[in-house]
Length: 481
Image (cartoon, rainbow, N blue to C red):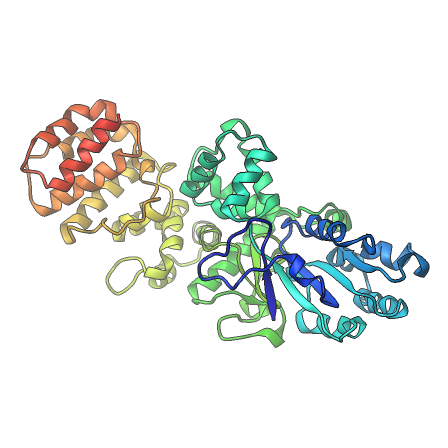
């Protein structure tokens, strides 16, 4: 069983197991602190060693094994950091057994370990080390993500952001706010947009996010693999292949060992990755997170959708993967995107030239809601507007359940000004037109064309032949600008 740990001032999230502070485990004979790369395991382990007493000793696994004498460590509670680092450089795989042997030679003192979640080999590691524990048990603790309060505090205190809330809101709108939950990826994102130099589009933001998540943040790990480092492009391609297989087969994640396979977590080898060594490396990066012992899942579903679409687009456009085969999986019997695959569908329409027209025609709303239409040429954006009009004709309430963060502003293109103006000045008042215009107002509310359309907006406000909701939305936009 893994217990979730909270950081200081981290509230329990709804639906999550109860969170406990690390201090609640001070009486335990032994525990291992697990966390994702860059989650702050070392910092927290050092602080806990400092907070406990003078009889606590923080040191790396290498220092524990090779540098300190038994007299220096006797009668101390030992905080041993970096198991994953020394394990990565070890050739014989006996590091944990060496740690156990030394602990037993010291008389089985209280000890604490820190390790990357994906590098802790579950039950086998627990069995290897627990006999060094005073009660033959070792608790497994998993570090919880940063809370919104913690993120705001770090942005203001560590990076000097005067309005950290606006920074978080921007990330939420772009769909990459999950990056903020890890201290290291939070830092990378802050540095990447230093001076408010945000990427040009949502597409660029996701690419930046995935490249950051594919990085190896630990210098020791980088040093150990310098001679055999895997190209970042290979890592992202392999992650995309794994994510595509996972999403299209409706699986939750990947089991890193055959003993942990379940119906929802097939074994890594069963995903048939094109390069097994690259696959094993990429599941240890921040693109994945631990779900339970030796089982990982995507760091966030939106990341999986983006990378799987990127990989599929390359297979279709460059390597001859039949488009029809993919469309059979993405488009349901109603002719629209399959509900659980809308994110993949939206990104594929943006990134795959071969599939774009067909995907827009089938489900334009999904393309704009889940992808990023901003980089598309004018003709494709106009096709999306045409598709939205078609959807309004089929169902007047077609956009009523669209999530508030939908990137509608991507369609606000000066080249489409006449298209917006024509629709806003239409003399038709059937349900399809009313609904379509209300959808266009949602788009205009996020963009910069309003000044050129203020006359048309005011005319809608003054015309009681429009639905009340249409007039209200037009008034809100008119007043805001």
